[in-house]
Image (cartoon, rainbow, N blue to C red):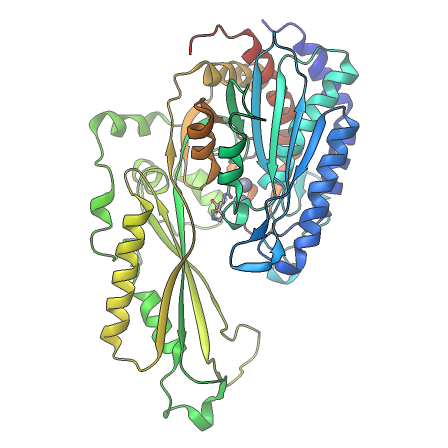
Length: 477
Ligand SMILES: C[C@H](N)C(=O)N[C@@H](Cc1c[nH]cn1)C(=O)O
Ligand SMILES: [Zn+2]
Ligand SMILES: [Zn+2]
């Protein structure tokens, strides 16, 4: 099966240094979507992708998304859409990825410069965006190039959609996808997204579910400006005191969300689902390795996987406006905003979650009896997604994993969120597959994010092999 793959694989190996250089150039562009001042870099990263794709012979469009909601002075970065191949006899696969990254600074504790790809003697390639999601996005471009240089016919038509705001909730993209579903994306037969991670470090997986993410801000204000705590401490009610009490009321040490009614929205666990967890190749040691500690909530694998995949979690991310530098500044911050998010699961409807969150935060704040002012708002929401892995899209990917990695992949769900996955499924009516490249120890969103050279190079082979097996799959649905 797929006899041309050997030539393709050889070419990927021969081009590996060139592909690493391409990743080095991409990592060097600090395309942080959450930082307004970095918006030109996000745009530059989109242009880099567009130029590389054009040079590879793809038809490329940079499509504007208008102004950023709530920040009307700021243009959203363009979506880069592209088509490679237009042969009616071939299947068409739509791939999605994102070219923006999470914030990163050396002073967060990185061992290397976050925007300089640094490769150690074990082949670990450190750099912000290496695994999330620049490595996988470039994987598609590299697959095109290796086919061309190997003289192997590209097996499908490839539609690409690369956005620059995923780490900020994919602002503006839902409307774009809905508008293009019957236009640019009209001939897509299936969708593939490479933007999550293996469960461990050894066994690849195919992913058929994601949690959603509802992200909130609680702003508490009182004094007209920051104050001297010696002069005003004991006389003014302090926003930080109120905020820490509100935030502390949201969740307990074992991750149990304290918001009444929220647990009732969660789909009950069935015996059939329960039986799936024991077969997954995952150990608590895997988790301890990627966590960098043994501070887990549950002692066992099954409950841990459920905690990540099928139950909601609430995380407190930070406080804007609070003193956070080293030293001992004696300040009373005048206005502080706490940021927290809830990872949502079937059958939680985002509107119900919002209603319960707003009511609870309001009640807790009222009980404090504070004279300060509180405003709780939703910053962005993306819904959970669970699909059927019984589809030719998954069969093709499974064969590709076996060919490249020599093992059958696990079928997994993911605790993270890719808000547009559901949008792609609903707008195109096609099956969506998540095909991860990186491993559990890649530290996406964290300091020292990396992608192993082996995962990158074999991952490029995997993406290409997947397209070949897609071309061979009988049409069933
Ligand atoms: C899984 C994916 N690579 C990812 O990191 N997604 C983000 C999406 C998001 C949601 N709100 C803000 N960003 C995530 O899961 O945090
Ligand atoms: Zn991502
Ligand atoms: Zn991410």
